[in-house]
Each structure stands twice: as structure tokens, then as C-alpha cells.
Length: 170
Image (tube, rainbow, N blue to C red):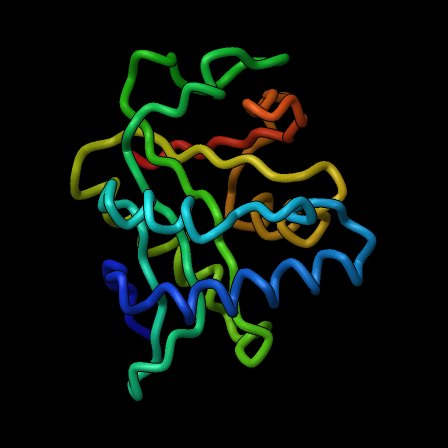
């Protein structure tokens, strides 16, 4: 597997993967991403901000997508709980991780987390943060299994709540 920066030509593949993820979440009774988010405008903004990545195989087929950034996340400023690190300390963030139905269950999400954590370690960044929907038990299980700790609840700009996790990297 290869994790590389996204380009505008990847948008159709990313949107197909997002659609797969939306259908999958709906089949599990999870209302996450059921309101048209993330849309093509969000993906284009992620690419413009240089935070968007695709996961591809040796044949250059796009298998998944993720946003990885070290830019501060405004919705993480307030938490009903406590982060493991102070808010003024740089941290990494993973958002919008989605895997194609054709490649679900082959370890792509774990690969992404390990790649991003290595990047943070090389940059000297102390931690990674992530949030997920309360009903997304699969993502919660993955996060906890990779050593992340539950820190509390954050509120998105939309008003929706998310469970927030953090892992010390360095």
C-alpha cells in the first residue's frame, strides 16, 4: 500500500469511496455522513489545504482516502473532558478516513494510522487526536486497539457531538 497526496484527478475516486462509506454507515444504522457530508467542495478544500491523501495499491487503484493535518482543529478547543496534551501544543489530526467496499477489512485504516503516527514522530509532534460518531463502534474499536485513549466529547460546527480520542506519540 502507498499513501500519497491527493490531486484533483482523484476526486471521482474519493467521492465513490465516500459514497461506499455513507452506504456502509447507513446499513449499520449510523447517521454519520448521512447529510451529504463530506461533499466534493470539502474534498477540494482538503486538497487545496494540502491535507488530503489517498491510499493506493501497487496498480495505482485508489483504495481509501484520509485527511491528515497538524493544523489546529477549532472544534477541539472545547472538550467535555480533558485532552492528554495542552491545546497550545502541536498535535496531528485524522479526519474523513474512508475505505472502498472492495478493500474493507484488509488493514488499510491501521496502515493509515501507523503512517501518520510515523510522520508525527519524525516531526517531533507529541500526539494524534481523532473524533468519531458515538454509534461508530467499529472506528471506536480500531482507535482503542491502536492505543488511543478516550478524552471526552467535542461539538462539531454543525452542533453534532463526537467522541474524542488522543494518543501520545513521542
